[in-house]
Amino acid sequence: MAYKEEDAAPWADLPTPEVLPVARMLAELETVNVLAPLVRCSKLPFRHLVSLYDTHVTTTPMILAEEFSRSQPARVSDLSTSANERGVFWMEPRGVGAERGMAALSLTHPEDAGPSRAHKTYYAPPPHTRLPARLTPPTARSRLVRGALLAQLASPNAASLADAAELIAPHVDGVDINCGCPQRWAYAEGIGCALLRKPELVADMVRATKDRLGWGFPVSIKIRVDDDPRATETLVRNALAVGVSHITIHGRTRHQASTEPVSLPAIKFAVGLVGGAVPTVANGDLWELADAKRMREETGVDGAMAARGLLANPALFAGYTSTPHHAVENFVNLADDYGFIFSLFHRHLAYMLEAHMYKPEKTYFNALASSVQVIDYLSSRGLDFATPRKIPMWDASRGYSLLP
Image (cartoon, rainbow, N blue to C red; front, side):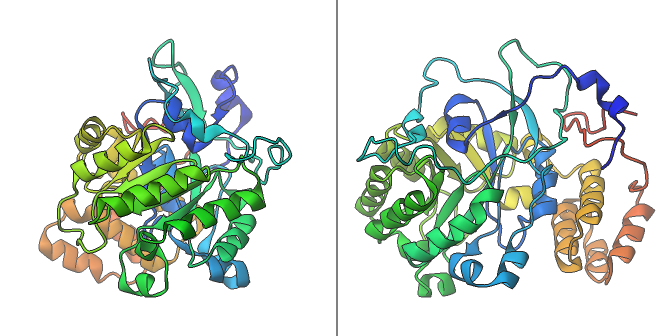
């Protein structure tokens, strides 16, 4: 992705992008879009890809805190980052009521206003060369903002979570505690949905992590709604009491399959429990940009998170109804730039291309056994992976680089 300085000269007068905690992005800016923590899939090349298409916040796959803190091979396997994986976006500030969720920005313990821990930090944003998709702001009020990366951690205890968070904090913009994975093995291990009815433990996890990293370091939680509304209420109130930065709500219970519809009223109920004390994000059944708009309007959340929808169409938040060809080209080049194991490379492309292939084509594509075979096949269908790219610039709405 190297480029000559003169190529970027027209952008020399751009303001320095703001680097905001996710809670401030959600509280101050309109239509914040989030990539969910996808099992094995939301790794570096895919996170970078969706950041080209108006996904402002990305999340790592769920990382098992105990293994991450104890094992160097686990750390190498679970986390790869890049200074340029976060996008740079022109974003619109909220109008009246922009103070929503600003309680999340306190740098001190909610029960102790002393400043002793407020200046401790484990994160300094690395330099980067990403530029916005357009030179001029869309409106007079637009703000230039750098995207954010969250690490999602899962743990059955507070100590392991804090250990892993301390190791990962220099490389991310915050950590998110998984309280929503519904898989049986996760429940048996005491992680994910097993925490939904352990509100004291969740509060201990938030508190222990902030004690370790400083009370200004963002710690969020991702939950599912509960069959018993009182359980959701207790979980939310305990998290708020210890300074959780924001809360993401998946609109299914742990017993519901992904084929069952998400409950927007249940999400709205949880948002009501939060009461604007911190920002909220909704997750579940986002397949088109219109779904995200409807979710915001009907639940009152500050951000929208997509999972399977982005796997099928990484350009979802840029308004495309199916994966555009340039998203496939960008992904292949990013996977080559970063290095990506073939099984995941192949799987991502199968998701992206599913809507564009007939059944015999899918069968043929799924049988391809190497990256070379995949690229040759896609090239035969007219995709272009060879055109030189001068700088990491991309206008997702128009689908081309702004520089020749």
